[in-house]
Structure formats: C-alpha cells, structure tokens
Image (spheres, rainbow, N blue to C red):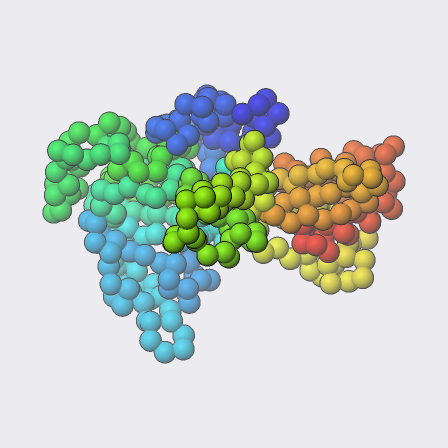
Length: 400
C-alpha cells in the first residue's frame, strides 16, 4: 500500500494504532491475528446500550436478525418470538429471560439500521473491496454463546463494553478437545492467543482461524465486522464470464475431431480466455465487476426528485454512493471525462475529475468547501451541474 492510500485509510490507522495500515496489510491481513489495545471511549460514538435498546425496540418484526445461543447451541426462535401469522414479533420478556440465564444475543447486519455503523461498513468496503456486514454480540453470564468455530471471512472485533476472554487456536484444532466447552465454559488448552478484551480494544481474526469468546459474568458488548475478501475462484469465475460472451464461448468442444483440429481449437481457446486481460488482472477484476461490493441504497429526498436535484445554497453535504473509488480517465479526444466503476462507464463533461478527486475517499464534503476546493478551475454553476449529474446516476448522495 502506498503512502497516499495509507493517508486515505486514516480511520483504519486509528483502529490499529500503533500498527500502521501498511504494516497491517503486509504482515497481518489474510495471514495472522492482530490484537490492539485502545482507550475505553474510542468506540463510544459507534453504539451504546441505550442505542441498542432503541434498535431492538424498533425492529421487533425482523425476527431473522435476532439470534440467541448458549454454550454452542442456538436456541429455538419459537422460545422468544412469535413466528406465525402476518406479524412476526420478538417477545422482549422472553429474550431478556434467556439472556439472564446465560444466552448470548446477536443482532445481524446492524449496519443496515444504524448510520454510524453504516458509514463504518462503507469505509471497510471501500478499502478492502469486499462486502462487509456488522453484527452485534451481547453476553451477561460466564457462558459462551457460539462454540469453538472459524469464520469464512475476515473478522474485526471492536469491543464496546464489559470484558470477554478471547481464545484463538489457528487454522487447525488437531489435538484440541472441543468437548471441554460442552457443559461449562472451560476453554480448551492449546490456544495461540488468550487475552481479556476490554472496551476500546480491536482484535483481527483471519479467515479459517478457530476461536471462541467467553463472557466474564458481566454485561459485555462487541461488534463483529466481517469482510468477504474475494477468492481466486471468484476472479476465475469473472474471467470465464468474460469468455462466455465471446463467439467461441458457445461453440461445441471438438472431442471427436482429428489432432490438428483439436490442437487448433485448444490454441484458439487459450487465446480467447486471455484476450483483454490486463497485466494487472487483479486491478482489472475490481474495476470491472460489482460482485465483491454492491452499492448500498441511498436516497437524497426530497431534492433528488426535483428538477434541480440539489438544495439551494451551499450548506449541504455531498458524498459518493459507490462501493469502491471511482476511476476517471480522459476519453480519446480529450473532451470528456470517462468515469468507471463496477464494470460500467459514464461520460461526463471535462472537469468531473476535479470533483471526484475531492470525494473519492468516501467522506461527505460540504458543498461550499467543494466549490472553494476547485475554484479557478470550475465556477459554482458548473460544480452544481456536475454534482447534479452524479446524483442523477446514483453515484452521489446529498444530505444536510
């Protein structure tokens, strides 16, 4: 990762300090776990118990988001939710009683219903280029919820309140007696990491690493940020999809032809698969596909439904509404800016690249600041026109 990208990932630097983003990506990402201590208050703006209560009270119909587990066994949803009829609902009294007896509560995809976590998930998606989901986990007693397991994605634990004991065992649990967790929260021996995690701490767990979290008989709350990093098979699937659109893709395989015909076909096939692939096929894959990160829905009402699409004045904010940075190139005749993202290309008037430069780190920028940043190159009327175009294509969102 270069210095410029390191600066754009300053939010991650704050999570991983004193480890730099560059060191994390080169030494830990996809390779080994990392544990970072932090100040108790650094996640206080993300979620509180009061906010969690409010979320649970307003999403009681979404029973699929709720999950209660105790000592590795998922509790029957019927024991705490009404699932029949037209109106499924969570029964708060029964949920609370399960928690009092030692169950762990998880609430899935909380980033979809709480703006600070939405923005955090978007930051992860833009940097790591992988779909991101944030779940919340809350426990009270000294009983673990989920059993010893591994996840099929990269995991970041952000600890919000209370304490939990986390144990990591690496990619293999040979010789580890998982049955020790069957009747009591006695973690198996052989852990390569065994730490009490406290508010403000971050724990990164790579895909495939076995782990278990054990509460400590006190209220504890943490976020799990899961990032789906693309695999080689995903990239190869994309290559085959590109090939499938070629004329050769629908031809029969000449299995009964003579040697010359089969060899000729084989050579043509190899060439067709490789046609159009750049030397840096990884970058090309991310530039041409939306398979890894799909844009989250974003609305700019009421303004986006008006002819102007923007509020009056310059006291509003603009941010990009895409899962990865936009790529901008000048077209062949130099008259337009070509903007690419997720396999699509848009043509905008010259000068759009100056606007995107100000927005491409994913942050929301006040319109007045945006106008000032490009002063001398674009006047305010042109800036508004270009922002209107981005909003009309759902590439940008407006908020006050």
